Image 1 (cartoon, rainbow, N blue to C red):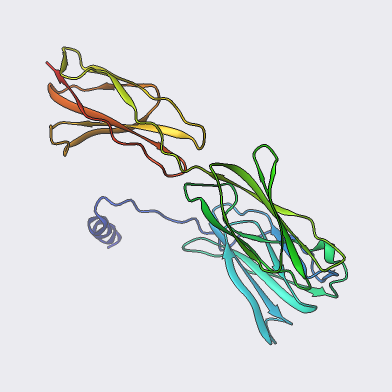
Image 2 (image 1 turned 180 degrees about the horizontal axis):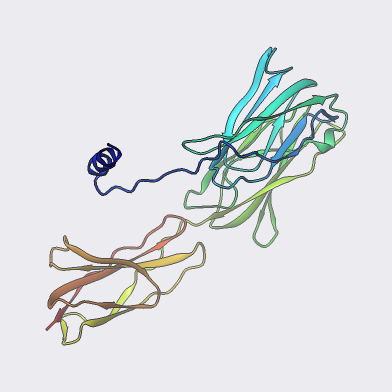
Length: 306
């Protein structure tokens, strides 16, 4: 009976790959901080845990004062990171966390904490929301955003270019700032103040590249050439442009309409391809970069393998 079921399953799924998630339900997530019954004199609480093998994300929940007698569920979210920072008003809380994948979850680890005051304002952490850290983009106009700090009266935003030149220095009462970047790499950072004390700066980097790569120049095999060998070396040239990482794609077709794609590969400088079947082939190239820009596609060259 089991054999019949497995045979049916194989026929039902066809050639699709069956991905089985590892069972993590008997594993224990190791929580590093805060310790149980920890007390804070700032409203910023950072939760930290060890990564768990075979977990793809983590679910963290916060209740006030406890989950059993909750007057409020402060937080119920998932993250792929192993640290999470949350602003909490003065009060007593219970929090718990577990590891997840698409099929299984570990048991929750539950702890308590108390926020006594916000007297240690400088220990708060400004959480930057967007853009993501180390973003590489071809969109020059960006909205910088961060989470508010309880008790903050304003925020100081600074933006530095890659030569450490300060290009923006703004004091803001909002938690967003719209800015249009030039092509360059930048560091942006934010700190909060309550009028007398300051938090440390939180920072992220962004690389803005709105310039398309140069179009490659095809050099070999030359147009309308022929060869008796089955090893074909594709050569080209292209002048790189400063900015995000650039790469080149090779396309080889079996028809002049360029509809039957035979080879598609990312290559660097040159590429040798074995083509065992005789006939006429057509090739062209296009350049891309990590920011999402692309060059024009080259005209196609033809070559014949006799």
